Image 1 (cartoon, rainbow over the protein chains, first blue to last red):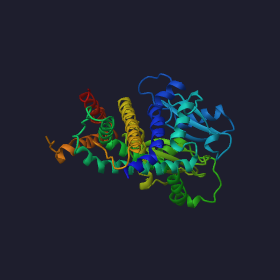
Image 2 (image 1 turned 45 degrees about the horizontal axis):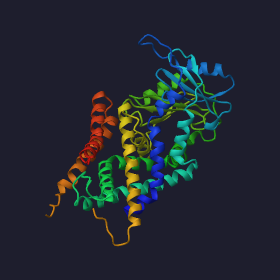
Image 3 (image 1 turned 30 degrees about the vertical axis):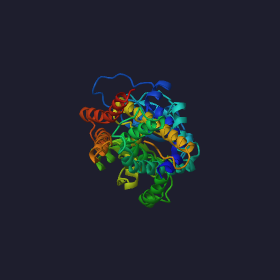
Image 4 (image 1 turned 180 degrees about the horizontal axis):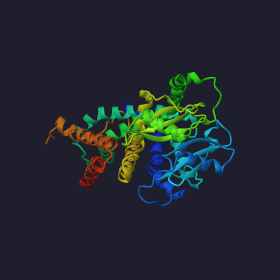
Length: 361
Length: 61
């Protein structure tokens, strides 16, 4: 079982490890390939500008366009990203971004979201340029990888009866050396590969899970406004964000979908609130604020399957512990490639042997 | 001369310790957030990499 489940996914795993390696450093690559204009220097303690002023700056730059969303996460320190489009309810492909100084409300730049190379790698890594079918194929490959890890652990014991933990027998055949190396790397990387494999499987289901939530629970939250037309916001964003902060204490806004956004509600500001720690900053809570009256109409946490998805993202990408963690992630990735290559070698060598000539290990 | 078979501890002891360290390293930086938890996370996750380096070094011809 270990051989066949591994063989089924090895090629895909190699592709994922190779494309995933530069993606570990996507922030650094993006900053180098598409440097953003930093916010202006201000004295310490300078407060942020009112959000209404930031909205006004964006609208002054593109009069007649519609603000679709705003994000505090995507830009650098003291910057806010504002996403606009020519039409309301536009698809993401119609968005363009403005980077705005959070303290002075001055438009800094109109950046691309990612460098082309990291965007290409991410799309390949996520879906093999095949959309949902590509994601689902990678999901199956991920499950196969997890089964191969578990089956590998089951056969690890008998193999190491012949050589102790981590012993590489240089005085034996080349095949025995590669087998020992495969066993050493595989068992030492066990927990990391299992975590990255399982979280990878969960990540492949992101689109169907969000679609399920949108058509289920979110539709239920928005049911009272179902037939109402899209609203020009009457309440300022400052008022809406203040209401969201009161509804979910101890959090700050991560992003806002405006009523013009196809990814929110035509009658609300949908404000995604985040916590302060590395974990809680990834566990978002959507707060619906009526854009007409300024009241919070709903603020319920995401269901367990989206919580699992949110938790699986950092554990898959390793982007939550600074550069040293990224370097360790890269080392684990390279060592996983070594496990795959040694596994392929062992499989090829075994095919060369006549049947009955077992491993002399 | 017959080689003595390794005990369960010799077979599974190191892998179990390394798995626990890896999981602890993965979650410390995520659940903590301070410099201490980050540093502890790097050290815990660095251990498996160091063990591999040590074993490869020790097995040189």
